[in-house]
Length: 260
Image 1 (cartoon, rainbow, N blue to C red):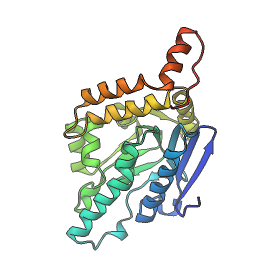
Image 2 (image 1 turned 90 degrees about the horizontal axis):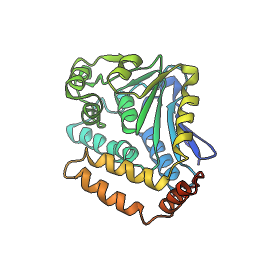
Image 3 (image 1 turned 90 degrees about the vertical axis):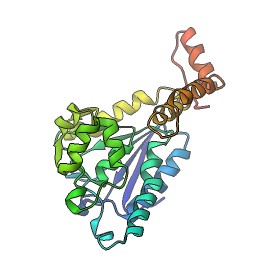
Image 4 (image 1 turned 45 degrees about the horizontal axis):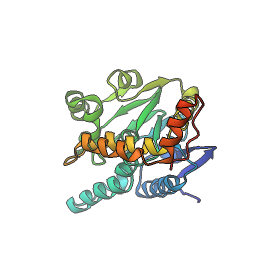
């Protein structure tokens, strides 16, 4: 499929999705969110794709924020609808995807860009990356899950400070507070993420999907994470992956998983 604002490439079992609006610092507009939704839907249905890397084109930005010109004159109702549709189409969708998504954060990840990175299952940053939620400096708050996911990752106090000051943190600071898992040089970023993805794809896709569901359940209102874990753990016993994994272990060989 051809997209207006993103590029999708695949190599064996790994897909790379690149937001491709470098002249706009890859700012998220409605069209880009739609493109990303379509791409992730297709990739999630492709059983050959076992891991996805999400990044931005160019050297300056992962995503420098939302496209403010699109919503500067919105009403209360339009603002609420913008947040609701964006969360459903993209941010919540990525978070709940069974296929692992790694955010390769190159350069600025601000506002909606940081919210997009936080919706991925984990993050790797280039040394020049800077992250923040500057929305209150525009008279609004993060609307794509930022007030929820940032405290989950860095704790309530740090999240409150980042949101209220509208300030940016460096890649090293983001690593120190747990916002990103690794910091590497700009040149190494995609290769480093690919190496992690290669470790992931050796494991059971079915089990990974269930693990994502169980971890996410702990952060969802009305969900009991322990109950979700118990049910997901049990369901694994009825899969070909479980039979293959345990048999391979007992036979002292590497398992070959199918995701079934």
